[in-house]
Length: 482
Image (cartoon, rainbow, N blue to C red):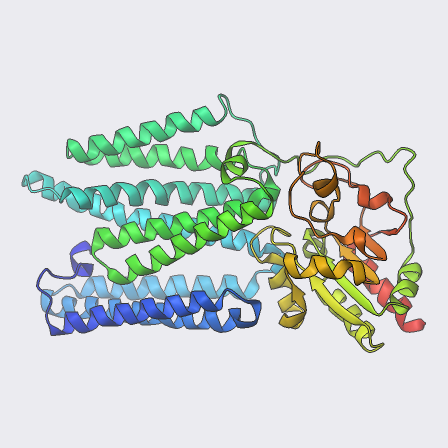
């Protein structure tokens, strides 16, 4: 299989054409990636990138088919077809059946499978190496290095992604899990991985790669376990980047230009997004990975003598009825309750009353990058009313009502006003500057930071304690009766 996918040293005319087609596929990936930079063009960008992947697959299939005819390896052709059919069917089934609330878990799983696939390509190279070593003609050093990198990064991505999947799914606790020795334990594992790969390359010993894979499998688990569940947007983005790097390394192993280009683009884009997500929380990537920050699942806050303006759906409906401008702030609670369609129906009822309704989206709201955008797009919310942090904050002082649906830390004024707060400095949506703020929440329980939110006790804040979907539906019913 390795030999089939490698481009010969002296390519023929057809090989040159195939190489140009790989470049064309890479260009489609780039244009598709550019389209993903805006909600308005994201769907088209995804389609363009998918077209590029189809082209890359077809080019690879033609190359394999051509070689199988000349080298009498038709069995491999049918194995590849079977793999495409099974994998395509499973992927299509998952994409059609998955709920939007489970999209973060699906993305985590895809990252894991991507990393695992890259590692398997490298393992195939190792199996081929056993024969090569017997003839004392081992792979070139640069190939051995890429084999090691593909295994190390791919296996870490594989195991780490499924730990992230478990945290998101609730199978594994979302709280940080402290390890003996803390980050130093993972540092020791990283050193052992490096030593195993050096041994494998210098001594030309395939066993070193297998040891490397075993250590990497453990490191992926121990690397993600200490990270709080609400930091998963950053972790998923980083794992996505690592899966791309592993794929690019696998492309170098087998000499496949399409895989090299696609993997490099995913790796670079994922890392840029990871940095942006960290900056959105005013935290360094090292703090996210090693600080063990977050106590998701903490109990409710004792408000003591603090006043809370508890509201009914009718109270909220009256406030909305007399508003001219409304900003909706979605959070993870909206996703859990599947309230995006209910919010859209409420917005439609308000718009029929000539109320301007827009949506303020915090970059780390939810459990994956763009989570809120995906949910609202499913409910056919127009792209031009989805406002990012920089465009939302100037609007709040002139907004009549802000409707916070299931968000917490991203609207906590302590991040702006309290220098002693654990989240001080984190950019927030400044909803407290609006004339009236309505917070829909089950209770006064904290967000993943485990701290109280002063927003809940402001005179201008109305607390509607309820499930997000049920609360929005009741507010809409009350509004229509006015």
